[in-house]
Length: 260
Image 1: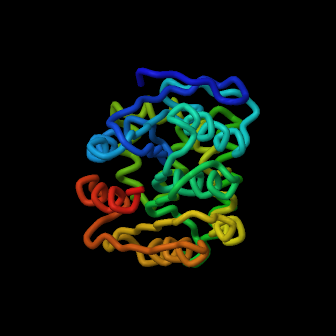
Image 2 (image 1 turned 90 degrees about the vertical axis):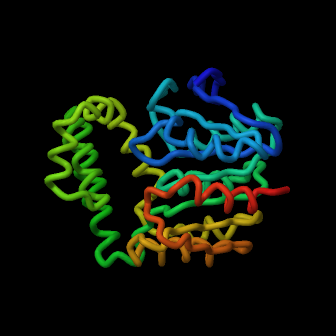
């Protein structure tokens, strides 16, 4: 990240800008930094001024305590101001919950797009599972057991135990532990894990909710609920895609939606 801006509470945010055109801010999900969004940014840069950034508590950005979701909304406000005071927002996974909250908070956004924000409305005991995850995550982070916190998150995503063990013994584990405290931030952004219908209903700009056709049916249903809750909501399925969406498939869809 080659630029830095200061959020309202004094937190430094690392970001970079690519391309020219209407501004679009890309928001990553849990256990990721702005670098995760770089491939998508590259594919959108031919038609847009694309902003990628490290969310607070990860990468090269700061982490002022105490955390609150409103602080992350203020971070987006600062980034939007830095690129002219108007932008479209895209968020993947829990980053989608953040951009929906930002739009509902009245930030100056043109459009909002989300990919597979994992609301648990259709996943059986999803709400109960989320509550248990929050409790155990809080306990693990409070005891500085960062590795256990990462394991909890990976299990929440459905990763098999043998894959978790492999991850724990891999070179990437140290980097995952380094940003483990930010898992609590994503958990707070998800606000209990159910679709915030009333908040989404207050969003007056177009909302595009996208899911992968190869993703679990409960996740596709939750994404469709997001579109249904938005007054100007649209739902789209990308055939053959999973939660690890191919930027070559996603970018043309976003480019068409974000055209002013």
